Every structure is written in C-alpha cells, then in structure tokens.
Length: 205
Image (cartoon, rainbow, N blue to C red):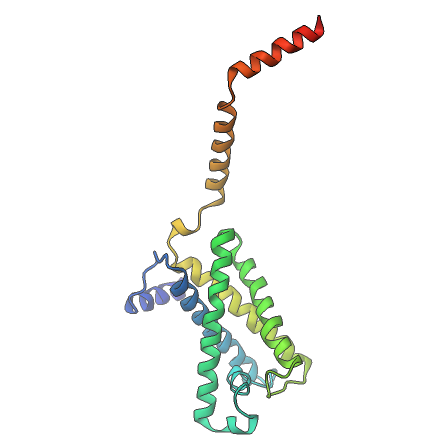
C-alpha cells in the first residue's frame, strides 16, 4: 500500500491522473515504469553475481562496440536507449489490455514480458543485434525474470493510471450480451410464430 501511495504522489507531482484515456501516453509511461522495475531487478542480479551484463550494455552495444561502453557517457547513452525501447514496447501491451480487458492483467503482463524476452533478448543475441554477449544459463534465466517483472509492472501501472471506463468489466459485457440476446428474441414477429404453429397443425392432420 505504501508503494501505491508513493506512486500516486509521484503521479500527482508529474500531473498524471488516474483517469487517463489516451493510449499512447498510458502505454509509454507504463512501459517506462516497467523498464525501471526491470532495471532494478537486473541490478540486483548483477551485483549478486548471477547476471553477467546490464541492459545499458546490451542496448549500447547495438550502436557501439562493447569496449566503448567502459566510458560512463556511452553507458548512460545505452541506458537511455533501453528506457526508450521499454517505454515504446508498453504501447502494444496497453492495446492488448484495451482489447481484451483488465481481467487477469498480471498474467497478461507476464505473458507479454515473455514475448519481449523472446523477441528482443533471444533474437537479439541469436542474430547478432547485440554485440555484447552473454554465455551463462543463469544470465539467460535472470533476463527472463527481468522481462516478467517488466510485463507485470507495466500492466499493473496501466490499470492504475487508466480510467475505469476504458476497461469495461466482464460482468458488464455479459449483461450487455444478455440484453442484446433478449432484444433479438423480442424482435421476432409473433405472426411468424403463429404461422409456424398453423403449418405444424396442418401437417399433423
């Protein structure tokens, strides 16, 4: 609860309300929050010796050779690239939640995090997009966990920031579908039913 209160204060300070409806800002801001959470997870793994690289090194190696990332300004540039990429990747996730609803949003976020891990990390290493390489299985596993953190954090932030009207509840959908069914049934012409009964009686006789 304290974390949500602190986030709410930060949102108010940044003039970000909890009733946003615009898809692009919601997706971008939520992706940014998810990327920051992802970086915190990565830093913990890196300092504990479980992970080999940081995401600043991965992102920076797309444009620069790994030996240039020993310089602080290049590493900062790599981190900026990583934050921008993560923020942009939040936009498709919000489109998914907006289409499917916020039910089970944490699960959907985790699935999306797995997708980003496969798309960006696995293919990035496999096809040489990243010049910085990782070799240990522990590093691969921690990056998967990091991406799960990204997806869950981004999805939770989206639900937190977005106006409730954007995500209609499943119960409302069911009520609406039931009303449409009843309306379609009530729109049947009674004369058609009488005609069917008359034809059945004629066939019986």
